[in-house]
Amino acid sequence: MIKKILLIALVAFPVISFAQESQKIAYVNYYDVVAAMPEAKQMQDSLQKRANEIQAELKVLQDEYTNKMADYVNKQDSLNESIKKRRMADIEQVRTRAANYQETAAQEQEELQQKLSQPIQEKLQKAINEVGKENNFLYIVNSGVFLYVSPNAIDATPLVKKKLGIK
Image 1 (cartoon, rainbow, N blue to C red):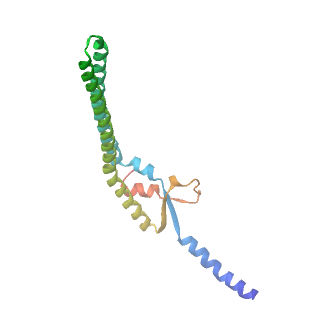
Image 2 (cartoon, rainbow, N blue to C red):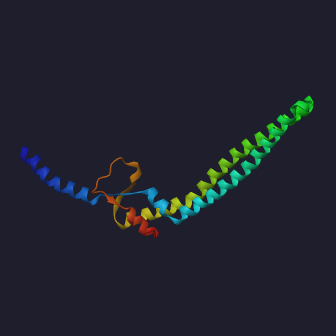
Image 3 (cartoon, one colour):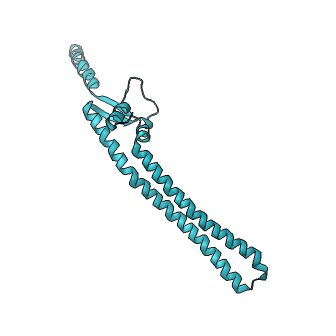
């Protein structure tokens, strides 16, 4: 019985070692690659341009609110009750418009980011898939997820950058 167990162990050990060596796992620094892509820079520029437009419009609304409020405060003693109510309603309307605009603009900004980032993600995923196939990797994982990566692990980041034409 012991001889059979020893024989099985001697036969199984090389098979297990061979199987482990043939299963190459690599990692890629996903965010490092994305940051190096020219498309990501273009996306950031577009998002920043839109954010600046939003800020400019919010500034206009804020100035309108500030001016109406200052005018109301300066003249409130000389205004009759009906005019005070109308002006306060105007002020509240400007505040509501600003809040609604800010909410809508934030949603639009998020949708724009998703729209612009999708082709970048697809392009990167395609490059990762090609590198994986070309190098016979069993898996390519994102290094940002792991707390520890062995120095013996294969870093596929340079391969993916090369596939994308990034230096």
